[in-house]
Length: 406
Image (cartoon, rainbow, N blue to C red; front, side, top):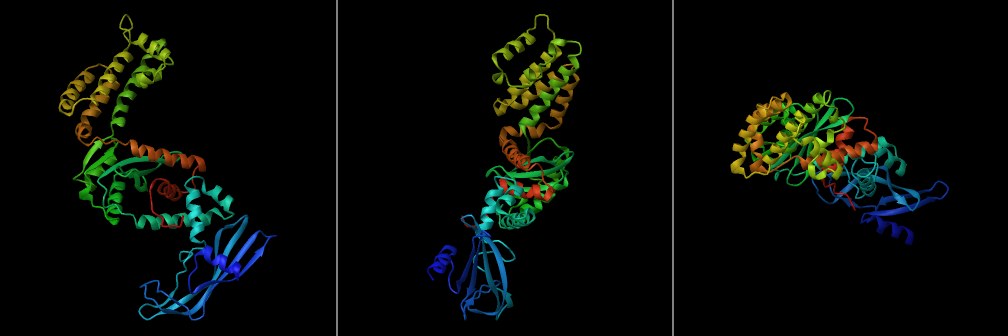
């Protein structure tokens, strides 16, 4: 009696549930707890919540529970069907597990916590369960938590892509810039994914008209989708993606010039890294290449144009447009085709670049989410399906409330 009472308190059982008997097999490393409800016990209807419903009949079920020391533990119980005057015959809910699950709530909480930190296959080995069952558990938990998520406070959204597997298999991520959480992930990187996000946003209490800012790279597909799905939102182009245009232009000039100027060999990162991140010897070598006395390097000229563009981001907003106009004219007349092309691209995205001085938003946060998702993928050495990859993305970065015991 004392033993059964101990397990009843540990499981938090309340009337009419009780521990009927226990079975312990040391050779099999297994503990089985058999639960039952008291004769005449009543239950709440799972549909309408009406109390006092009597059991109609019952069917036996089993659930995997947390291990008892080094022994696997299982709960067994007859789950009653109820006769509700309003809803008819319904199966009662048990307090230790979700309907249709073969695991207790505590076991599910353990799997969710472990899957955030390690590959699901490793969790399967640790718990002794097949990973297919655990994936079903995680998808169900993530789906339920997302269904209850509230997006009504979302005002600023970042958009980015991430590789699902090798090749050109991508998913698009949408993140809440104010709360640093993943809102939505979907396969593809076409204009239509933005419309899918809008549908998901509104299904969770958000409104397209409340979105004041979108931050993204200069993808034509994302721009088209954003203008169609969020016509009232301002589109800010991520400053680091914009700056990357000039980095690439400088590198293209260097690669073309190094065929005639061997001193440019092994200098790629001298031109691409920030000066304050170079070592003393690297700065000395860069200064020598920038010395105008007899060098005349096209790469050095492109580098100076790049530095002038970096200074653009530190300007007061009232001077930004004037400065950018002069810079574009200088870059377009440089005679360096990659630099000229970069200036044309910047002119094409003029409004979204200048909008940064109002919104001051970047994709830095979603790049962090991207790195966390890619780190999880690397630990797992990839995922079998895109659905698995998206499930882990929500699990790791969605800040979802799973409403599980701690």
